[in-house]
Length: 329
Ligand SMILES: [Zn+2]
Ligand SMILES: [Zn+2]
Image 1: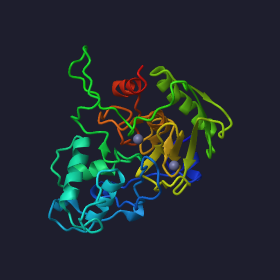
Image 2: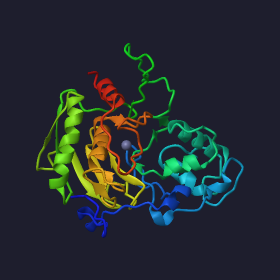
Image 3: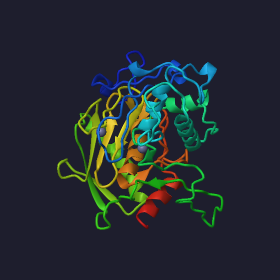
């Protein structure tokens, strides 16, 4: 089981290198993020490890014009999730602690996406949001935001609920599985506990199956499978290293890549356990990416990027509308 022992705090996977904790102090510090490594088509990005946490103390707040130690770390965080891009600009503050107009704009966009007051200043609420572990897939890819609240693209108003607004989104170019490919096989690769993951993933695939035209089947041969599921630690060969406990929990690639990786250094659970992450909820989210959905700005949706510990989510109407829109179902 993936449960947490009360005294040892060592689960089966933890003994194999899986552990997770975030001290409360983290809530008051901006995570320092490692440089973008690798060349994933979707810029899968990881928050760096605890040892890189730096020191913007929030009692003072932080806004445009400030030069405060740690602002550079904030820039790295926002760059990695797609919010900040100094490429092609003459701005020479990309690598320093200067809170410039680019950063203010990026913080505003982040705050808008996460339903915070879009002040462009760094405040405790914003840092708290950034401190919640999340999916490693960027929110903004190639400059296109997937989550902006109030965007007009993909808005849908059903006749039954005029005020229901969908915020699902797709990867750039809307990659999807071919129309002829409705039966997808999956296999576990680099997973020592596939006996635990197998029923969990089967249930998650089943949920997506019931919401779409897809059927899924687990097979043994990961070389032949359309989808491979692995549990990996740190640098694991796809150019998108994980980050140890906390930060990024998992990532997956858009169609038809088929790769889905759990971060092996988290403390995982098969049920709702305080301080542990629900394997099923994370599978449900990452399968959404495998099928072509990007992050949603609907917090209740499974495609919302952040995934708190001890929480289970199911598919939301927004997720179902998204998959049905992508495949014209
Ligand atoms: Zn995600
Ligand atoms: Zn990976």
